[in-house]
Length: 478
Image (cartoon, rainbow, N blue to C red; front, top):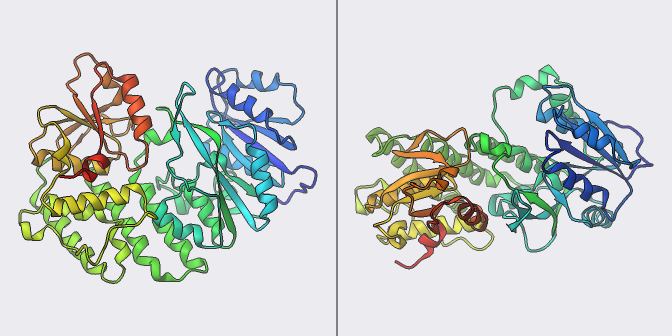
């Protein structure tokens, strides 16, 4: 941010928009203008929309509005950083044209930061809605109570809870400098730009934003659903590979943790997350099944290597659990099913995510001779929807049990048309076809998104299939 004098404006609300005047924009704008807290400038940043966005915004009779239209071809990152460069408020929140603020959102956030002056950045819980404004659940990355994270604490908490901020709820104090990011994306400083060229890190910045601030400053989560956050099939993350940004994220988190007041004793834990997403990247790129002998050998060697490293940091076992499950699934020797002692690595407590607890249950189930397929009807054809890594593990486990997996359902257009371990990857909309062979759908989401995925399936499916979560399957008694 620049050092402009901002004493007269407590807050800037910046709305990023592109070509949604005919869909979501008006509801987003109306919710902002109707806020109970009114002392803000409303900065609308239009990324050269070809629709009637300009006419609509300029027709509004509210002196708080500033409308800025970017040149055609401007990047999303340019539009985002232009908000922080152009804002005149002492604090700033950058929100999006498909989300809807609750009426007391800004008032609650401003009061919270006034009460906790050490907090430089704060975000809130959300209510999840679909494209038709219907509520489909609560934020899957949340805490039961509001919390202030002192310097370094958010970085460590993320390793266990993956408390992932929704970017459009983040309010930032101008004391935190964004000069580097503005130089990178707004002024396109070549010396800075070169260091990031070629990296696909979409989504990682959502968590890195508060992580960077938390190196030296307190950040906070407000445990109240103050925004209706829209999930739909046209969001940017439906077009990217999510493994690469996750690898980048945990490497960056490790570097940031070293700069914070925390000790370096957590290096192995960060490294286990990096290797976990490297495994995801590798597994989701495997098109054929059975696995090539060299691939099997490499994966088993990696599992044995991690089993030795875990003796130095037992908690590093939990992020890399998918590797040990895979090791079990591809091992021919029954004595090789448990490379890590469960006595050394007990069941993860409730500070870990539901997905981590489910991976542990799956691991224990395999050690006991069970399978994720135990709760499925072996006569019905299966499709898998959700996390690609869980999907890959499910495909191997189900195929070993003799269950036919006919498809992986996918909204990410970059993966549609390919195959995963011999299973075709098809658009989720194919469920609407009358001749669809899918009779069961296993939800492989690692997030707590079962309710919204179930609702989506019921909305799309011509013939409603039986729906079950992989978590239900692995937690069920054999």
